[in-house]
Length: 356
Image: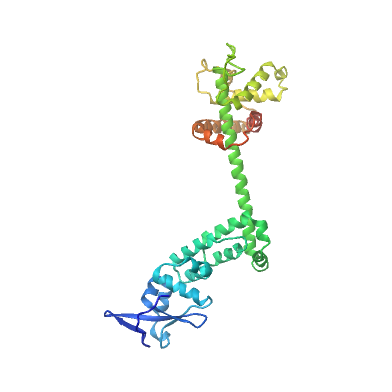
C-alpha cells in the first residue's frame, strides 16, 4: 500500500515538502479503514476524484475524506495502489478484478479498466459468464460483453444449467431476450457464411471443369481427346484428373446417347450447359477453339427464355470468370483443405442447372 510521507499531516490537511504544499485526503472504506493519499495524485488520475477534491472547503469536515463504499477494503487499497504505481498484481486481479472494474468505471480510470477487462476475459467460464455479462453492461465494457455473448452462444445448453442463468430469467428478462437475439443472429450469420463458402467452392470447381474441358478438347487426356485424333494410350493422368475423369465420362455419354436428340437425357442436358458455359467465357478466336459447339453458341447468341433466367446465367458466368482469375492463388490451398471434393455431377446440378 502506498504510504504518505513519514510526518503525519495535521488537521489542516496540508503537508509542506520542498517548499510546496501537498494536500492529504483520506479515503474511507466500508470497513471503516482510512487510507491516506495525496490529493494531487488522485486528481491527476481520476476526473471524478478531482471534482470531489476541488469542492469548496465548506463542504468538507475538519479533514478531507472521500468515501468509497460498497467494495472490500482491500479492493480499495488495490485501487489506490494502482493510481500511484499504474500496476496491479495478478493476485489482486484474481481476488478483486470485478470490484476494480467497477471502481475504474465509476472513477474513470481507463488504464485500470483495460487491465481489468483483459484479466476478466481470460477468466471467463460457463459458471461466471452470465455474471460477467451483467457487469459488462453496467460498466460499459464492450470487449467483455462481446466475449461473454460469444461464449454463451457457443455453449448455451451448458449456460442454461447455471444458477446465473436462472437468476437472469427471474430478474432481467430484457437481457435474456438480448442474449437469445444475439444467438439467433449468430446462427444466421454462420449459415450465410457456410452458404457463401460452399458457393465459392463450387464456382472454383466449375472454373476447374472449364480448364479440363479445354485441356481434353485441345490436348487430350487418358480416354478422350480432340475430334481429329485418337488419345494416346500412354497418356498419363493430368494434374486435375479427379475432375477430368468425370468430364471424360460425360463427354463419352454425350457423344453416344440417343435420348439427347429429343432432350430427354438430363445428363446430356447438363453437358450441353457446360459447353454453353465454356462459350460464354471463351476468349479464343472462333477458328482456333476446339471445344465442341463453342462457335455455334457464339454465333447464335442464344438468349434464355425469360429475363430472370438470363440474369441468373450472366451472374453465373461472372462468378466463374472471377473464380478462374483467382484460381491460381486460391485453388492449391483450397484443395489441401478440402477433405471430400464434390463430384462434377453435383457441381453441374447445383449451379449450371439454374439456367434450365
